[in-house]
Length: 253
Image (tube, rainbow, N blue to C red; front, side, top):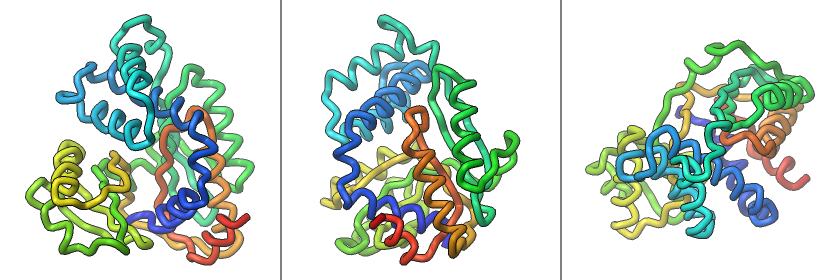
């Protein structure tokens, strides 16, 4: 099975630990920035702008107030504009054990962000690569995640008519994969059938994954954690699996 099961298991453990609440302010800042850039690049109407529709839905899922969402859209569409200063910069590199890592950032200071991302890689036994070095390992997909303990694949049949191409079991979660343009339709079909959706997002899905074990796996989790914590980092994609016991040890630390 392709995918980053280690990473999604780990995300769900971190989520259960309630780390999300403590970082809500920081999360809102990141979500608002993503909305602003999506509105700037594709227009302020979510109907005709899938990236904006996804960013707004993510903000709603995080209980971000409506007025914050509207303010971020306005900022992107030039109302009292500082949106022009934010640029989207993609970093590519390798973590411990040879895991490919793709880091999406939204920044108003490319030099600072580059230095910070490079430092995170170096400090955690990884190295930043050249543009194009790992991007080919990933493809952009829509991914809807549901709880694999509550639902099985039969419950998700409705998603196929809406454009879903694959369902992958992944560390207690079911990941429904589709074309980016079909993401909203797939989510709505599942919700319409009474399936509770944990998240729906555009993600860079790896075409293959590698198993990383031992101390390398621990360094790798620390690296991804450090990157995800950074204010300018919007998303981290990687192609690793790590053993469950290492994830649990890491989450308990």
